[in-house]
Figure 1 (cartoon, rainbow over the protein chains, first blue to last red):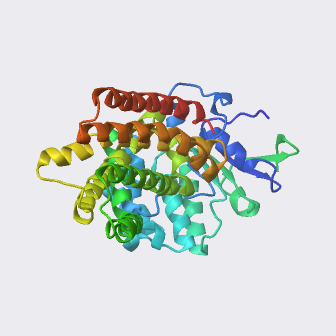
Figure 2 (cartoon, rainbow over the protein chains, first blue to last red):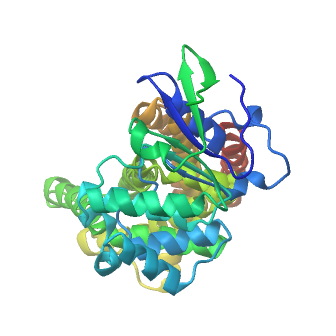
Figure 3 (tube, each protein chain N blue to C red):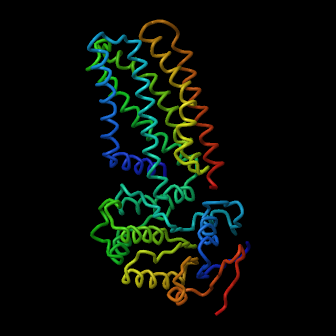
Amino acid sequence: MSFSIYGGDSVLLTGENGSGKSTLLKAIFGGQDKKQIQWNKKGDRDRVSYLGHELGLYTSLTLEENLEYFSRISKKPISKSKLIGITEKFGLGKRVRDPVHTYSEGMKRKAGIIRALLVDAELLLMDEPFNGLDSNSVDILSDLLKDFGNSTTFIIVSHEIQKIKTIVNRHLHIEHGKISEIND
Amino acid sequence: MIKSILIKELLIAGKAKNGIYSLFTLILTFIFIFHYTLERNANLSIDSLIGLKWAIIFLLSFIFIGQSIWEERESGAIRINSVYLPAWVFYLSKSFVIFTILFIINVLIVFLFYIFFKSMKIDSLVDVFNHIVFLFPAGLSLSLLGVMLSQLSHATRLKEVILPVLLIPLSIPVLLFGMEAERNLILFSGGVLKPLIILFAFSIFYGSLGVLVQELTNDF
C-alpha cells in the first residue's frame, strides 16, 4: 500500500470494517511498523498526534494532569488559558480536575480529543473521532478541524462521510488492501 | 522529561488507593496466616522468617508490577508515550518508581515481621539495615525484570500469560541469592559479598536486557 500526503492536506479515509484503516493510522503514528513510513526529516515523527479507539489518557489522573503530562513529553508546553479554553469549549471546564475514570463514555471521548488536539501537531490522525459525541460536540470538533485545516495536515477515519466531506480536501478509500483516491 | 514521567508515575501510584490497600491487606493476610498457624504453636526460626519474607516480596512484586502496567496498556497511553519518549527513558523511569514503592513496602514488611514474629529481632538501626540491604539490588532486579516482561507481553500480544510464565523462573535466582545473602549476614554463616555482587549483576543484566527489549519491541 503506497500513498502520499502533503502538508496542508486534510484527508478523509474510508473503507469497510476490517479493511485496515485503523492499522494504517497506527502505522503512520509509529505504533506498528514505523520503519516503513518515510518521513521527510528527522524529528517529524514527534510532531504527530493520534487519537485511536483507546483514549490515550491515564484514567486515574485528572484531565488537567493528563494534558500537562502529554504536553510536557511532546515538548509543546500548553498555557493554562489554552487548556481552560479548549476544555470549556467541549463542556469539560468544570470537570478538568476530576479523575478521568469518573467521566461518562462521551466525556472520555471528548477528553481524548482534547489530548490529541492540544499537542499542536503538524499531522493529526483521528480514528472515528465523532463516535459517542453529542451533536453540540460534533459541531465544535468540526469547526475546530476546519480551523486546523489551515495550518495542520490531518487524516480522519470515519464512516460519517457526508459530515466530514465538508471539512476535508481529499478522500481516500481502502478496498481489498489497495488505497485509491476518490474525486467527487 | 524524566521529571515529568516520574511525577506522573508517582501520581498514578498514589491515586491507586485500592491497589495499595489490597497489597497491604495481602501482606497482613500472609503474616496473620503464618502467625496464627505456626508462630502460636512454636516460634518460627529466623531462617524460616527470611524465607517467608522473600516469598511475600516475590508475590507482592508480581502483583504490583501487573497492576502498575495495566493502566498504561488499557488506556492506550503506552502507544502515545512510545512516540514522544525514548524507549529506555520510559522503561527506566517506570522501573525506578516501581522499585521505590516496592522498597518502601519491603521496609514495612520488616517492621510487621518484628511485631508478629518473636525471632525477628530489631534492636538497632543496624538490624533494620541487615534486613533490607539485600532488598535493594533484589527489588531493583525484580522491577527491571517485571517492566521488561510487561512490555514483552504487550508487544507479543500474549498479554497476561507471558508475565507469570517468564517472571517466575527468571526471578527465582534473584530470590535464592537474596535469601542466601540475608541468611549469611544475619546468622554469620557465610560470605555476603559474593551474593551481593551477583544480585547487582542481575540488576545490570535485567536492566540492559530490558532496554534492549524496549528498543526492539517499540515498533509494535
